[in-house]
Image (tube, rainbow, N blue to C red; front, side, top):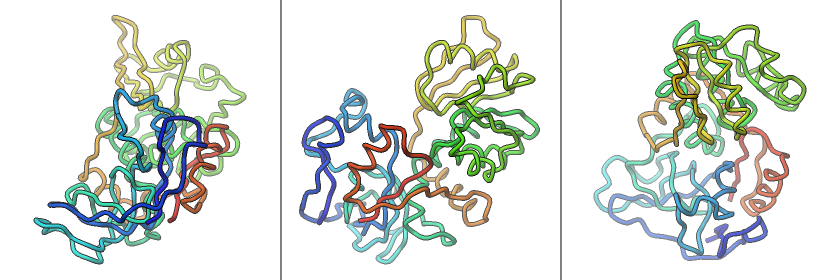
Length: 305
């Protein structure tokens, strides 16, 4: 089968197309015919080796961390899935035609969108879900700033914060403004021309930080939050000064099928929309990495074997 792998860490040129044996499901696993996988910015860190202390890879390694697909074979002790089931979830090595995954890490795919589009949900969607509902605990009438609303996680975060009843302020570049507005943002700040401190007329209750910020920018974020409020960062930690009345939290999203299933229900109910900005063949993976590193991507890009 076709698989996009790296044999060493490095720039996007290390990504290569290999022909490898199709895997067989083990106990508790299923074999999935991949309809699509999705690119995530963290894939760059994995490929470059920047995350090797946290997520060490056994090289050569097939890239990809999430998928949508159809079950084609069921391993022993699997009672929740059957051949023909359409599923989504997180798993390693999804940049391939087939992949095995533990059955208990998968959920039924949405029925109201193309199966391939659902590959954009598991990582970005669950990250946004946990930021909004678990860490920031957004409630109705709160003022929430989504810093980095034009990215894959940001699109979900804006929609989920609106679903929670918040007044949503979003930062985005001009190329993302229309999409972020369609997601329901009440105010959009063009971060390429307007400093955040100049754009807000009053403090916010919570900030969801989805971009890498400098120490100075992190300090500004904390200053924009009212006493008792929170800054939640899904990228680098944002620290509040000792004694600050603002809470600063950093998290790495965990794989949670309950959260993922809840997102699927919102997608099927029409509450959450998937922003697929490009559909590329899997063999374009290196090109997608080049584009992302040069800042030429936005939203979610899916890759189809």
